[in-house]
Image (tube, rainbow over all chains, first blue to last red; front, side, top):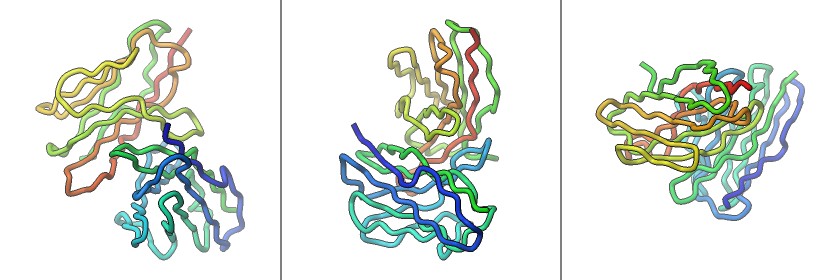
Length: 113
Length: 113
């Protein structure tokens, strides 16, 4: 199978702090990973495409300085939400690509107080 | 016009019936089409994908694609209460968009006893 993990599964933080979310492909190498955000009752919205060894490609309207993405190895991509605000509270989901298919991690629920 | 459109539902079907989920897309150059199931609070899981016009069957699931009408559907036979979830249609756009997926807003399916 193709297993993708995320850590943490949930996090609560204070407004103004930064939060790092990890996405790992456990049994395969992923040159490309994707980061999505999903608000309640809404669909997945792609935030950025993370490519190993190069800068991430952000979707229109996503602030690259606020959502820092690092894809340092073929099995790990990280998303750091900097200076988090309550409106950043959401369900963050990563996916890793293998042979053209995307395999999703279990998601991280972020709550900013 | 949204790139990928789905009726939000809820679609209610009795146990054992056929559930029919529909999706339309706007980009005529779309190459690949995916159906994901998402349980509340969980990340999406891939049910099946289809590339070519016609039907593709996998167990109780059948995906149907009509590129001329820009329409893709998912049929679930012998619906079970465990099939109750939100079903997301995703489209991989033209090759110029890389391997990004664009998701519809999802259709909520309720299978009633």
